[in-house]
Figure 1 (cartoon, one colour):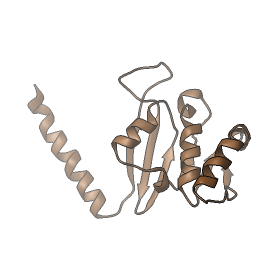
Figure 2: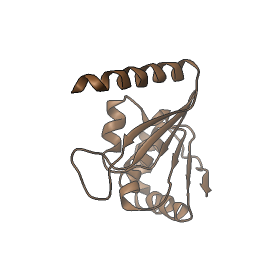
Figure 3: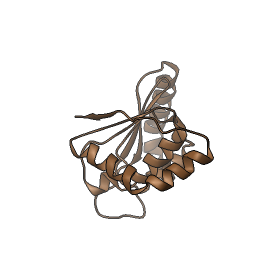
Figure 4: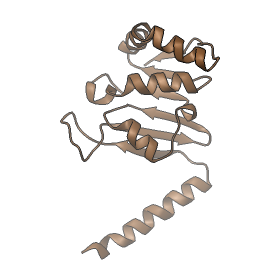
Length: 149
């Protein structure tokens, strides 16, 4: 029964190797779950990569764990992008945002209208914590570009 999947697996692996060697756009599914919590599937999240640019699209439950498994570091993220603001797409935004803020020299946050309010709320709610962590690393907080879709 498993033998019928071997050609598909070989095709997918060869396509991935070809894609990487050509520096083409790559989409890595970090999670594909639904609003209903499921221990077997992380919430919606995709890592879009092209050459040295990495954009994390949505940050559902389990995103951090799956990024760790792939050895993707916060400092490697160039942007956090929201497709829309539902909890299952935003659950891990706050910790990912703060980790990226502390690790990356510059990155963007992109999303629909409530994105600015969400970012400002996180910065306000965790102002002391962020300042403390930044002071430990001798890093200054730079203004983040927030792009509304």
